[in-house]
Length: 229
Image 1: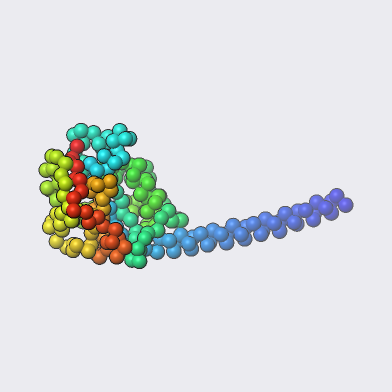
Image 2: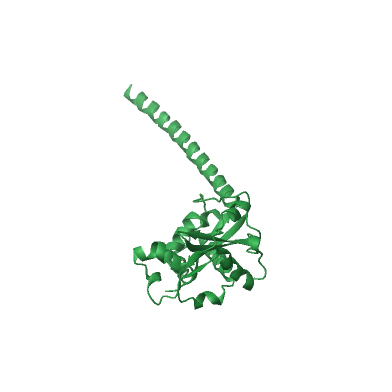
């Protein structure tokens, strides 16, 4: 009886194992399909450039961040390259089978992003949704940043200015002739200029931003533009 019970138990275990494998493999296949759907499920990119002195006043000073030290001289830095939907909104934290960036690749983004930690966060939140691996995502981020000319006038700001938000956009449009006003927006926070958001195709060419993104643009008559540190 004991032997028969052991045989029965063994067959039952085999059946259970087979069932588990079917479920696991099926879930893996669905996850891979879902990951590809997430990766392909965006229409264009938003390149977000952060005005570092504003970030320092809002966040960096409280962290005693080196980017905010006197003499750092940091102005517009890349916040991220974000996959975006034409209908508004964006995918986040997508499942992906693409290889993540290596630690040295994240560190190499410091010159345009300010920190390897930010580079890592941007990969986790947005890069996973881009349908490419980490190295390609950071290459695209650098290429996108290189496609936008930053006006020299921002380097000459020596005191806190109060300007209409549209002036920031106009300064960029003046030196980026390929762009039109509906291809970039300015965001504000706490009465300060926060970011410039530039809309690009998947091949990183200028394109029109979606209506929701344009509707969220800062249109304040006067916002603070802190000087470089």
